[in-house]
Length: 326
Image (tube, rainbow, N blue to C red; front, top):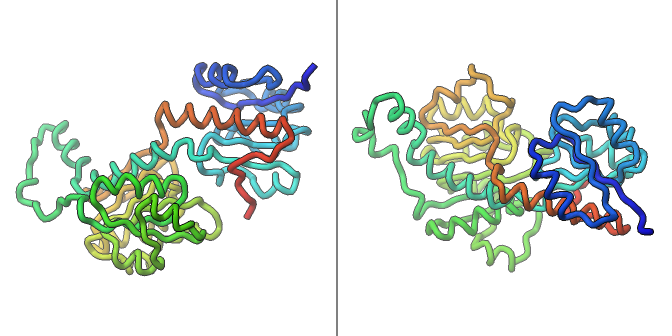
């Protein structure tokens, strides 16, 4: 009889997610799913003999990891893992893996949408439309609205998401440059249609700066006063990675002082966003609630990769897309 292995999905929201995991899993992989709102006691009991855990948000912590005596892999369905105790688990011999770009297409498409929306102030147009002020004041402000075509877009972080943003911008006839701390092979640069430049040059010369980096000690507040001062007064900042990558107080100052022209932010430094946040009152800022990766296709791909990685662990192989401790 084949050895049984156990995967526990903590905090699922939809029955179809569990059904997909069970349909994709081979018979030797037992799937145990705990819904949102389950008690900590139930979680600790379920994970006691688990080898793989899929956590949802804050329902997983180091106490859960310690209770799972056989745990080998924590497999997230997102790209980011900054909410997990990755370093502590690494010391315990537990690996953490992200979704291998499962939501990369969704986020890349959303990033391009934010570029266009910020350039064209679509949120202001919709706000006026639904408020009964049809197109008021827009014909007097032609100079505030721009086309994406022909612009230089600087991508910071040419990973799975950043590279997909670059490839999509080719259809918009943009010039795309990038900066990354990792050396990108020439073949990948060519496929993405990008040119590598120093970070300062990217900030000084780009019409749009789009952020696609993980949140860690190095990237926290990597965009602050100094970096914003380097940007052109006509430039736009796009952030679909993690809010704390941008020093929000510095960004607010830069926008108030017209140091940059606008921002499109799917993520904020403190989430959920306070209704007192001054960014909410700015017509040149497009805000969305950290949902860039939300698509049915992204979830399906992430769930399928979770099963793929779980079986690698069950077979004694190294998991893929492992996030290294800092």
